[in-house]
Length: 225
Image (tube, rainbow, N blue to C red; front, side, top):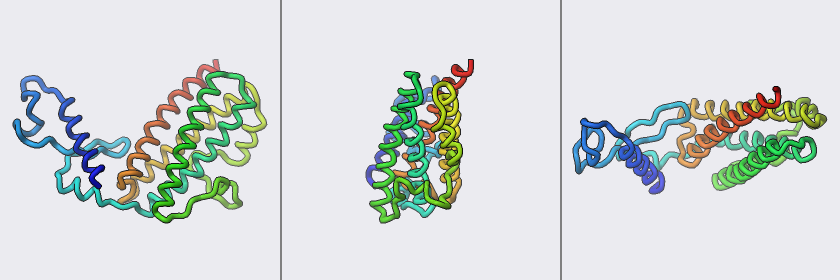
């Protein structure tokens, strides 16, 4: 609880110190007040949403926010989502000769594997079911947004060289886009995504996946020349 309040306060101080408006106030005075007043407490917004100023009482309330059923479903679904990305990256070892593709795969594999472990711990601490590593392959399993179908995975596994590189980049861009959809759906659910740890994780997923989509889109464009 104290860590959340401290993080919010640090955000407020950082935001205040970076704001400049020559002539309106001196650097020593926070926005909306005079010297000696406490800085504003700013609650970061969900991806795509603006941050907002909150009072100290609201900051204290946020420290008591608990995970919701939607949060649990998000973590469980994202484990399977990440697991497929790792499977896709494993194919790079024998199906591409491009150095940039290998480096991309290494970055994805490391980040996704670490995040899977974090999500498993998150669920375990809360006494929730942890999906098995092959749960997504079970008959009748529901694919999360952006995940490749069994047929698409088979086609990817059968390809090599430039054809594989193209299918991989197209598939991973689609896959990452699905992760963004999952984050949007989480924050669109009333009360969900507010617990400190899951808020930070979901926001990081949104930012990281967007950067990797931009990188892969550039690589795909270069490949298609």
